[in-house]
Length: 384
Image 1: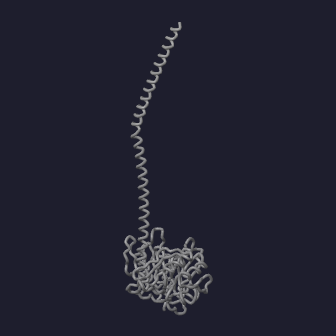
Image 2 (image 1 turned 60 degrees about the vertical axis):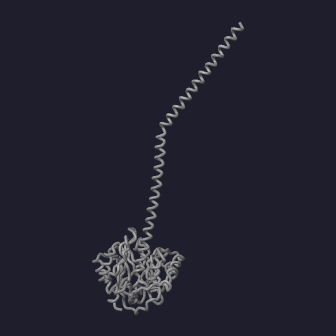
Image 3 (image 1 turned 30 degrees about the horizontal axis):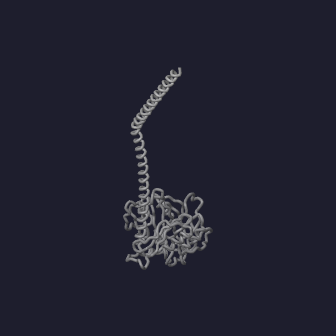
């Protein structure tokens, strides 16, 4: 395959992480991969069968607070020219063009909305091997802050064409993009203002549920799924123990397979001789990835809406309880105020009654004393 034919193809996938040894142990438990050494120190190759599909390396110290992530490489016949063109379209160069001996030339860019990706021009090397039956990358999804602008940018840079769009309601349109007549990925809005634009890659596996179980067992985390999507495919989105996000896609199961047109393979690109970006383009899974990604996005949106609804309902309940407490306190206060005159009247009445009783008692006692005194005087006169 010539360099001209590599333009716009996803040719390599690279995991940059904080613990390469842990990642090398984790992914082969989840995906049909194995690791292989490369000619570059500190760089490991991901193998699916006999095909090189990606690389593994430590996150560079100059990356600062950048979390572990997967970096997608897109082919171009001229890295330097593509970088210049990308800058003219509003992109930023993260890592300037550089040669990889006996492999090719690459550069890392940030698109106008902030999603990071790499471009690669393969050097001379052996022809690519056959695409792997399992373990290849089957779909690529861009979460961005401006889907229309992102489509224009990548379309001008790599010749990607606008495909079908799926209306996601409040989340906007899930936009499919095409390369060489085949659907190869989708673009959607980021999930919330705190989420940075990024690329997410799907790996073709035999059993999505098994991949999820292996992820959990290996210390990773399930973000969404597994779920069946139109066409019969099953997908799941996960995160490795170090924080790198990835997804899997399982072909339709025989019992649940529905009639659906399968997209044609994106083809293959040239594989480099040794370490870094191989140029083998992944073959899409049997089900239409557009439907898979669109449905996944719908479920994510529904989950977020339900979560917001639960929070809103909780706020309403708390506000209702608070208002009820205020009403009760106000009622008690009003009742006390209303009761005060009556209490004062009752107290005055009781005091008057008590005073009358005391006065009557005093008069009775005085009369008794006077009668006693008269008796004493009469008795005294008799004695005389």
